Image (cartoon, rainbow, N blue to C red; front, side, top):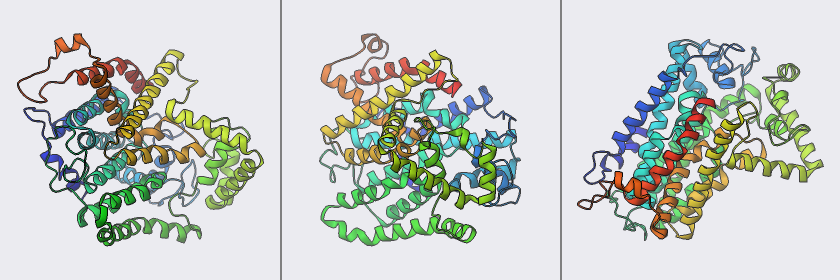
Length: 492
């Protein structure tokens, strides 16, 4: 069903007189990612701590699944059933371990190739998102940047975790919402014709198939990273609101989408109830993470030295008390600490918010490399945030929906911990908004790069064959950041 929804409109998306449509660009992006995996040997596993760095807790659970112990053992020993991590990615990784071997090079190559496929599939989704909301040039150049920019592919080619899966599913959910809300359709949006779009939107709008697809994608998102669920109610209400006076007629379809969502998450919740004799809808570790982020030694960074995967004392307590009792105990300690000094907790939240948007310092990196990484990270955040502000000011279609995503997705990380990887599900949307910002700057200020214009002139004989001056500025800006991005790819 997902592949069907990916192809409904995108197969028709074509830039007039151009050979580079979204799906050809997808194949280029996939080839680049697979080449990086082979060129930099990211499939080589580090044997330290029995390969714990390969997937961390998710890798351990995948090993337990592949060896017949079930969804269990998230740390270094046999500690029994777990819900420390959400189930979708460990189940995928466990299946790969079962076929290609536990912690083998073939398994590493397989999971990184799978992540690269998902990361490359974001390319046509970005093309459609930008085209619907801001016009074809923004959609096209957002897709090109995602396909070529090293920092956009880093988690796919070298990290074994759920970030790439979550980012793909979230962008797919956004595209479904845009289709159901008729964004980019002149009949359904006052801004639908503000740019020359190359796709007929006659088939847009809410339908039974799209509502069920919406429930399916959000069910998978919940099983991949449940922190994204804060955005789900806003997204559903936004779709109904876009129906105008017809929203009541959409309620049965929305209700069935909700039932499908519940049907997808129910087996995991029932399993947890059966195993732990407690209500654990998605993950059990929030209390422990809350303590690690706000305990006596917290300074904005997670107290990793006090984590069960690093502290033998905490590991033994975890094994003796059981997962649910241990995390509940740590959660109570965290609540006491927060209530005792609320201003400190708020200061820590502000520090984590800064880390989320402007980069986490890395003491183990060379100062120049770390400065370049933080600069690259902060510039992309600034471009995305300013692009969002511009879209809101101009009342662009879906800008309110995008603002809700920017507000809600980071909330859990402000409270607990912040890291570069947690921003990744928002990075495709930030790319679109950043391109919109640069394009509007050129249109308003007439700011161009004559050198690039001579190298890549505008073709006046046909629309959108060659990049316009605004697009040339985007290309040069991306090239200027490429050095930072390459260092990020090598060092993160």
